[in-house]
Amino acid sequence: MDLNLILNTMGPLITNGIIDPGWNNYIALLLGMAFGFVLESAGFSSSRKLAGVFYGYDFVVLKVFFTAAVVSVIGIYLMGHLGWLDISKLYIQPAYVQSTIVGGVIMGIGFLMGGFCPGTSFTGVAIGKIDAMVFSVGMFIGVLIFGELYPLFENLYNAGNLGYITITEYFGIQPGIFILGLTVVALVAFYVTAIIQQKVKKVDY
Amino acid sequence: MLQPSFNKKLKKLIIEKLTMENNKGFWILAPVVLVLAIVLAFMGNPLTHKDVPPQQLLLLAAIGSHYYSTDQVAEMLINHDPALVLVDVRQPAEYEKWHIEEAVNIPVDSLLTPTWYNWLTRPGQTVVFCSNDDALAQMAWLATRRLGASNTFVMKGGLNEWFNTIVNPPAPGPMADKVQLALYTKRMGARQHFYNLGMVGEATEKPKEAPKKVVKPTAVQHSAAEGGC
Image (cartoon, rainbow over all chains, first blue to last red; front, side):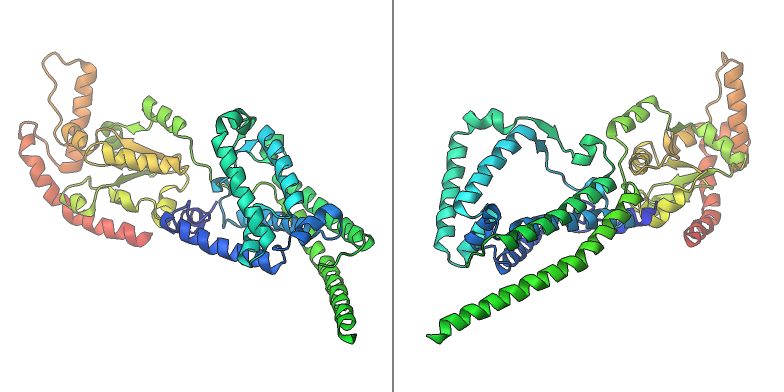
């Protein structure tokens, strides 16, 4: 292995000390603005577009997030092979099984009812959508309730912690094989949803 | 009256065009992504650089297997052991004042630059760090081991110990056994080899002269080592 690369030019840039950690928040701000801008440009500030996934007339949400996952995982692992990125230094969110399932269900219901997810609701607020503002206020009320009643939820909140683990580590699959599988699933999903979209009555929005 | 329906038609046309183009994009991009994923699947695990776990390092340090005694180092130097690289990790100013002749000066703060690190971790080498006492050398050892080097060691007691054992070996007492006498003879031999000092009694005075003799050749060696890398 080329230690030259490891010691000098390998990402992640902040963990490896190539960028000073003091820049963390500024970079986050820039990335956040770029993310919001792209979300808005892609039409994600429209609750009808977002809810379209559930009714079958617009699958753009599924396509965007699946594409993001596939592109980034392929990119990250290719960079790992090229020696540009030290994958072992990437931060992995800890996996909480039960709480993720419960949280996912709540999030899905909220998504379907309100037509936004947290990020997109702010892009909606940014362009002055009233439904997005109502949604955001509701979100803060939800945060407040959760915060105040935290002792009640505490056990569920911490349930099923598997630590900092990835799917491939947990099941002992080769990352490359898993990525190939994910890619195939994504491509099939894109194709199938395109067909569904054609058959479902178009909604003007 | 005409305008709204015309607008609607235009909108429909645009949407149809867009979806067409989206489909085109799909058929162009899907194979690209798929090929990349297949390539990845055959590439195995990517290069990662796992640190040596601190527990393992602590265990190694506790066992003390990373130590070379001054006698061992002296013997290797006398035998011109080709594997030995004796690295003085003090600052250049300290190094210029006094150092073991064969030692190369790589200050501890520049030890992990790619050039030095790659040079030090060439396979087949035994890298022994030394400093005034153990402290700096231990730091160098810890940092290099943490990065995955397996051939770095510490000269136990550092240059102080070197001074007390090789430059100025304590004379064995009247009750000394065979082993101690043999060690003393060996150390005197080493002292003769390194500093051309024969007599025991003059030891406290003479070593101070010895460094001055040593400085000039090593200055040359120092720069040669740097240039070589």
